[in-house]
Length: 307
Image: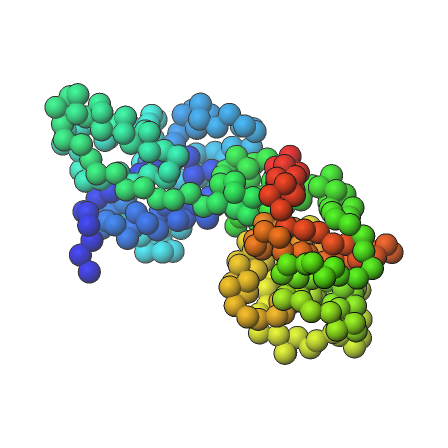
């Protein structure tokens, strides 16, 4: 199938190559036969990356990461060292037919066209690729990865301070659900046992066949009987867990099995479930916690996750 352009140009630091970078490269390759990719030099990169610059990868590593990915995906490309924001795009005889940029670099593309227009050259079409947003609404960025807040796959990594915060009840301690509850969601096998034993209604149960991180028997429901399954390592809110919750909330499935640890599924549900839903989960040696999905609670948790 004929592509829209012969050559499309893009540039970036490509530090700690992540899903957002891959999305940009993939979109560019779908638009053009060849992608001209500028990877910022070490000197130029340091003028752009103000946060945790000591963890910025060397130019050679960043270049190799892009080159390897393009080879793996059969993306026809030409790579070069980028020493400024413009590269070869200001030349009248540039081989670039269009510019491919992420949402946050649109101003640079517009500046390029302004300079070209002032010099009497034709403007280049601008193709904009959406930023990859995480659970909290933040964009996946190399800065966040260098700060240790999430990884290249978009998994949110919790600090010891954040884990301590989430070990505290994030709602009211109750003995039974309230009749006024909206959509009821429950997290944890101990909570599931209580709900099933009392015939309390619920819309979704998230379990991992562990109670206080230890296997138990018999399980509340066999894994083979659960259609929706996902993975989530301890101490993380994985992008895979987020995607699974988004998927199951759009269906009538009642169970989600998490291979790993489901404790933090309550946090993901807070951001993904409809407002006024109610999340129930167990607090070890304390009881049942009732957390209402509200904008104020989302803002509170979002602030904690961004610290």
